[in-house]
Length: 475
Image 1: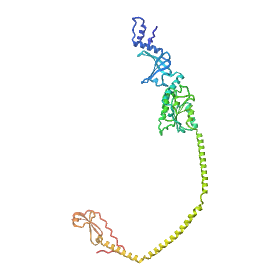
Image 2: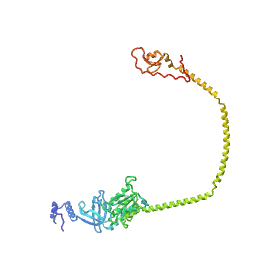
Image 3: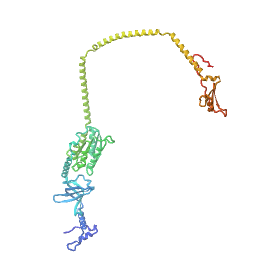
């Protein structure tokens, strides 16, 4: 039995030499465990550098580090596999026990446990049957959580959505069909959230788009959609698998905006269809469900308007007939007014007699009081009052102290204009102002020094003469 060993040209040759010298016998050189493990590792990796293995997943486990561990098995054998964090994050499905897959990678050993394992680069579901099995498992598990319950969904879609959000690829026939159909039926504002609809990262982008529309606040710069359409064209189950991913299903189930799922053709069914409020067989059908036909709506409104006008006209005509019938039973206007007119005439006659009597009484009183008025008495009282007023005027003039200034008297004031009545006050004041009939003269008490300049005061105006006649001097 030969023992394989690695290429000696690519290593230092120590292990290769030891293996070459190894032969049965007591004197054969001993290898260390590490040397033997390393030689086996290189032999396995060189011989199985790239392999594709088909088998059923068993013991699936995702470590806290993000690495994915499992085993591939068939009826007779089992081999461990590992998928590092970077490759595991790009998986298009969630690996579970019992799923048949095809793993692509390299075979290597793990010296710490004397085991060999498959380091997987890519992992895909093996065939449509395996995908359908995974589909049914996911459907059962998510359905058990209540994500597909009718009670979680809207009973009806908004009748005339002002804004429609569409989650789909920005290129291709799907978005063109939706926009064209909406324009034909009822033009509506559309916001397209572009996403991948197939391949690595498609499920995450679709889920983020749905949650993004749901996170738009009402009244903001970007209008919040009244309806969301998740759409994709037809394809195989592998092509549509992104819409079976748990992250997409939960995003649709949690969305507070009514959602239409339009993924694939009419025969294609995804878990997104079960989670959405309404499933459309095609993207074009989703556009038809979203809005009514504007022409039909206008026609219906015109019909309703005609019915309203007709009903109002009939009601008006019927009311007119009833009013005419009631009017025939009412008494004539002349018959209603005749008693009232007679009462008015009687009251007018009584009023005229009363007014004439009152006028006669007032006239008699006026004549009596007018006769009592005598002009001679009024004239005497006028002369008496005028004489009394003239006497008071003469008395006022005689008592005015300024009338004495024209007879040689002077009025003494201090610099502040107050009248000085005693010699002591004059000496205390120092500077005085003597007012004569024709003006004022400043003086200094004691005669020393020049008199201080004092602004002459304007001569007071003479009091007015008494009314009626001139008034002489008192002395």
